[in-house]
Structures are given as C-alpha cells and as structure tokens.
Amino acid sequence: MFTKRMPSSKERRLRLLEEDNHLADCEFLVGDQASEEPHLFRCHKMILGTASEVFERMFYSDFVVVGPVRVTEVSPASFKRFLRYVYVYEIEVDPLLSLNELGELFYLADKYMMQDLTDALVEHLKRKHNWTSGEVLPMYELACLHENLPLLLLCYAEISKFAENLLSVDSFYRLNVNNLKRLVIVLSQQSHISTKLILQQLEEYGRRNNLHKNCESEEFFKLVDAACQLDLNKLSRADFEAGPAVSYLFNKKEAK
Image 1: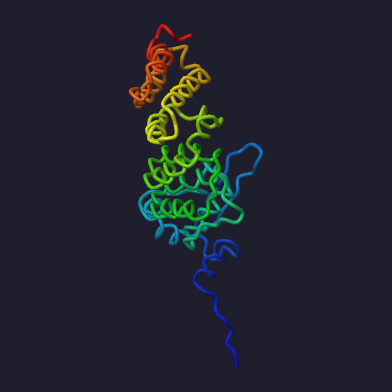
Image 2: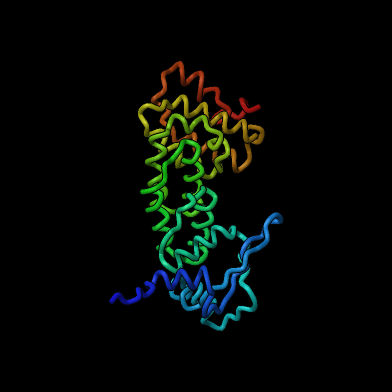
C-alpha cells in the first residue's frame, strides 16, 4: 500500500509564499508606477530574517515596522523573483530575465546585503544568458554601478568578443562617462581594434553628449582621461597628425 507523499521543504515554502499565506506576519507594498497598482506581498519574518541581516535588524530589533514596508525602487515582478530566491534559493528564469529585471535584482541584493544572490545572478548569466552586442554595454554599466568584480570580469570577456561592434552601437554613446576609462583599457588590448578607431569614437561620444562645448567640465576631463589610456605611439606619423595632434580632446582650441 502506497503512503501519501508529503510535500518537500521547498514545496512547503513555495506554498507559504505563493498560495495560502499561512503564518504570514509582515507585508511589503511594492511598486510606484502611475500606470501600475502597487502589489502587496505577505511574507514571513523568520524566513526573511534568516536570509538577510537587514531583514533581521528590521524585524528583530528595536526598529518598529508599522504597516507594510514600502519598496518603490523595483517592480512587483522583480520583487517576486527576489522573494522566490529568499524562500527557496532559486532564481526564477521563466519567463527570461530582462536587463531591467537583472538590474533590479542586483539592486535588491545590495539593498538587503545578500551576496549569495549576487553570486547566483552572475552564475546565471554565465550559464544561461546569450549575449547580444546591444546588451553588453548595459550589462557592463550594471557591473560598474554595483562594483561587482565577477560580473565585470564576465563583461570584459563579452566586450572582447564584440569589441569592434561595440564602438558603433547606440549604447556606447549612452554610457556614463565615468565608465569609459575601464572600457577603453579593455578595447585597447584587442589587437584587431585600432587606436585610431577608438579615438575617433571617443571624439564622436563627446560630440553626441555635447562635452566638446564645455572643455572645463568634469565630464569633459573624464572623457580626456579615457582617451589618455590609448597608446598613441601605435599611430603612424600621418595618423597622429590627423588625429591626436588636432583632436579637441587634446587641444582645447579645436573644440567647437
């Protein structure tokens, strides 16, 4: 005679989260978009507190939580994925994670000091994500934002694969100027990418972002600093005279 199969620990935790809210003793109200109603999540202090020191301090210290905890920086969909990891240590990837959701999950991992979630997201990207040239630089900016070394190293490998294409995609011109320096260092190490081409694209970056109109701005100096990472000795005399010698990046009088 067969005995009835009992739910596993994972199944029990998922049921707590997704179905009956049994034993729920805290709430999160997530979302702040005008076009979308905030979503109420009913959760369990003990599970949250054992997953994150931040939650432990929030619910088991002198800090008094009154009413639902408001989370306005991420979407309900991303917070639901986050809670799934908290409850069963899995990243739900069906449907596929978008770049925006990845960014929000990295944000939540930082906010609640969950390094294991950060590590799991990087591993997911290594195994599952099929990178396109349009995604590489946004992912690189995400890595820079969180100063996540494993993700940065992964991005550097992808930058090497797509190096030449990356200098002409729109996301290159939308990069934060703070993140150009490290990118130029990686690109300049690619033997098939010419110093001349990188310099030309940096000049175009400056024009598209109007940095050439204010040569005393902090952003302009950061662009120049990025250009200074190039080995100009690799240029022929003719390319040097047609490039750095007259570039507005190195000669303020050439800026227009």
